[in-house]
Image 1 (cartoon, rainbow, N blue to C red):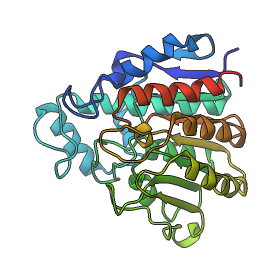
Image 2: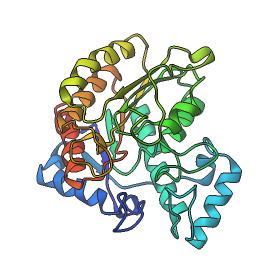
Image 3: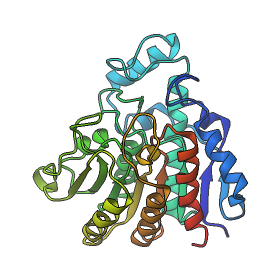
Image 4: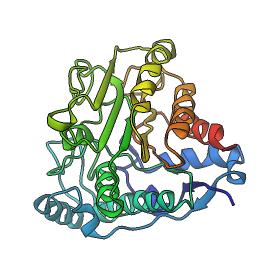
Amino acid sequence: MNRNCVYLGPELARYGFGANHPFGTDRMGSFQLEFEKKQLQQHWQVIAPRTASLDKLALFHGRTYLELLQQKSLSGEGFLDEGDTPAFKGILEASLTVAGTALDAADRLMTGECQHAFVPIAGLHHARRDGAAGFCAINDCGIVIEYLKQEYGLEHIAYVDIDAHHGDGVFYAFEDDPAVIFVDFHEDGRFLYPGTGDARETGRGKAKGLKLNVPLPPRATDTLFEQLWPAAEHFLQKFPIQFCILQAGADSIAGDPITSLQLTPAVHAQVAKSLSALSGGRLLMLGGGGYNRDNLAQAWNGMLQVLSAS
């Protein structure tokens, strides 16, 4: 049985902010065209998106914020935050699809139906428990982490983030949580939104030393990443990882319109292969950012290609 699972469908593509926005609704289509061109459907089982209940969003998000999200979804007016995340009619339903699809993938990984799963429109890592941020109306990463802890009792969940932007919504939500082993490579916050993720931020309380932030200088290339990745790999190997989430933002690839890192898709393939070996057969990959359509198509499909033999 094919145990590589990828989620595709128009419902998932609806999370986006219009044709003139970096996070447009065409992003999944760019990925899917390359997926089919490479004939990866021979190696990856295509699964339709799923929809979560509002209660699933409440695993991570506060009720007051969810009420605001419901209101803004009906009106389609204004912003969900201070000006980065526009509301649109149906944004709640689109968000429920992102969360529901990520949760379905988590269930299939936990039951062994899937060994690797990829959700292209997901990895919304900036949203806070009490609000939206940075194009992220919800935080599906955080929802999945809370679900894995509560539904399956997991105590060692690895969260690895190679998006150009620091995964602040995940980091600060679980900064003092020893169940979340956190590794984040990102462009230095002194030069890029959200301005966080200093190397000295290593966790708090019982989770002190369980979080690894690796800020990269602007225009960093694969050469630097390859020098730094083995230490991150060694860091993860110290823990009995039960499940791994990879936020695979492609905005760290050279040529992205809103970041300045100069990595190539080879980094995404390398990290996916490494985490597959570390995850014990439970690797959930979430697309994250990436605003150059060719970059995201190449980086995400490169990950799937390198895992196709697994």
